[in-house]
Image 1: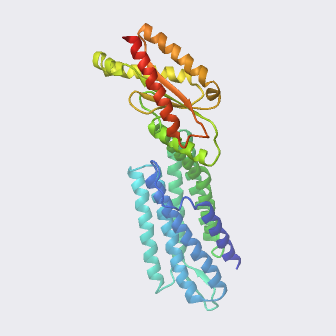
Image 2: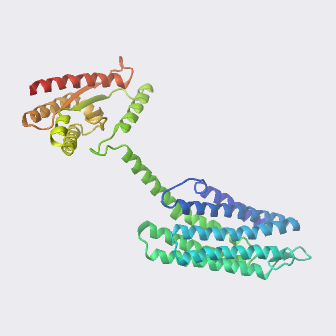
Image 3: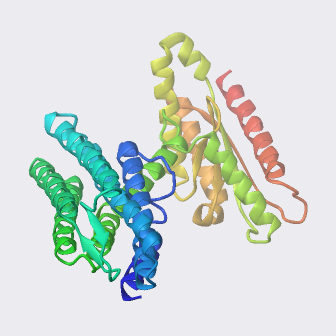
Length: 389
């Protein structure tokens, strides 16, 4: 039962450590490599099962079942080597001759093992059981293990060779893959010397733990960071750099939910609309119009430094007042209006703005606040237009 207990411990740790990696999830440039590594993990899982069964069946003297299990055991063992080779070559993104050589060698080893197992049905060239029901290793078994050692070692050397030309995190990942192959080479050698000890299972466990700790986790963190950056970009307005309408709508939904739950009691809304943008576009061109929008946005952001600014239309902006900006809301809108008045006199950017606050006793939704702020913005626009006449 000692032999089987090592396999049981290995498969439990293996499934815990590699649960995420074994799920069929597509990610970044290493999609193909991740898929092939996942296949390797599946093969290792099946190997652990056959290894556990071998220990139980052999201990109870069930020779026929042990023989069948051993056939599967050797087949899955070589399959895992082939899948490891496919993973390494794919991860290193190598389509050159040596990568093809490694893949070809993996298939040759797989073919050799299948032929040996077929022959073993008639003559025990790989393994057998004597009259005392003792397991007897054959020469073909040692040859197969030797070939596996060579293939693991070659993939390791190749990964370490690529490491020399790598940099940063990629260099560390390639180095880890190289050392993982060396670990497997060592434990296959021990398995060859001690057939009744579960060294191969321990080697697989150490290898997958190394990949998980020093490669998979890093790439998952990097992937999550890329997703976060992509999400951040999707919430940004390309012209001004402030948040866009999608971010605005999501924030409104959050505010509505927090009001319903009683988590928010106060906030304000400032609404802005650019005066004269159409005239600038018509007379000076759209590049000048874009610059006009950017200058207007800059003025709004300078005024409301502590609140999120959103571009919610071509020439429309909104600010949801929070914290210090909410407390200083009256002074801020007056300061803003004075600067706009000065701009109008100097021929600068002119922006109409209106602001109002949430009234918990009468307001039923965010739109109630927005509509009041919007009305004030249009009243301000009328005044500014009248001043131009």
